[in-house]
Amino acid sequence: MLVVCPTPIGNLDDVSPRQREALAQADIIACEDTRNAGKLLERLGVARVEGRPKLWRYDDHTAQAQAERLVEELQEGQKVVLISDAGTPTISDPGYRLVRAARQAGLEVVALPGPVAATVGLSASGLASDRFYFEGFLPTRSAARQARHRALEGLGVSVIYYESPRRLEETLSDLEAVCGPEREICVGRELTKRFEEYFWGTVAEVRTQVAAREELRGELVLVVAPGQATDVSAEEAEADRLIEALLEQGLSS
Ligand code: SAM
Image (cartoon, rainbow, N blue to C red; front, side, top):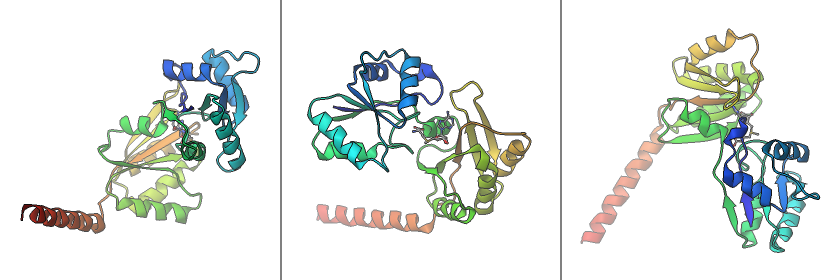
C-alpha cells in the first residue's frame, strides 16, 4: 500500500497519531531529501531499527525510474510512505507521478489528512473561502506574474499563492497594477511556527505594513480576495441554466 503522509509545516505537535504510525510502520519512506527525512523521524521519536524504514529519495522531475522501482516494491508487498520536506506531498511538492504510477498499476493508495500551508492561510484570512483557487508559485518575471494575476481575476474567487519573502514587495506591486490598491489581501508568514504573523488589509495597506519591516524572512502564503468574475462564467452559467430548462421540458413532455 502507498500512503501519502503529510508532515508538519512548522509545529511538530501538528503530527497526528495516524501519521506517526504510518511512518513507524513503513518499510520505505519516499522523500524529497533523505537527510531532512531522517531528522524529522528523529524529532518525531520514530525509531529506525537496522536501517528500517529505508529512506529513498524521490523527485517527480528526475526520477521516473524511482517511481517504477517504488511500484515494484509496492507490488512485492512493501509499505511505502510518501512524504515531502513539509506539509502535504503532491501540493507544490513532488509525489503525484508516484501516486499515478501506483494507481496505474492497480495498487492501493491512501492519503492521510494533514497540514497544507495554503488552507491554513486561507482559513485564517477572513477572505471568501466558499470557493477558491490555488495557484502555488508565480513565475519569476514580473510581466508573466501580472499575466497570471489578470487571468485569475476573471475566476471571481479567492486566489492563494505561495511566495518567497524576497519577492513579496514585487509581487504586491504587480498585484496592485492588476487588481488596484483597494483589493483585500492576507499574507500569512511562518504559519504554525514561533514567529507566525499575518498582514491583513488592502493591497496598499499591506504594502505599507511590509515596507515598514526591515527584513522579512521565512515562508509566506498570500491570499487575494475575489475579483470581478468575467462574463464568460456568466455566459456559461446562463447556458447551463438553458440546458437544464430544456432537459426538464424534455423530461416532462
Ligand atoms: N507541500 C507544502 C504544503 O502542503 O503546503 C508546500 C510546499 S512548497 C515547496 C513550500 C511553500 O509553501 C513555501 O515557499 C511557502 O510559500 C509555503 N509554506 C510552507 N510552509 C509554510 C509556513 N509554515 N508558513 C507559510 N507558508 C508556508
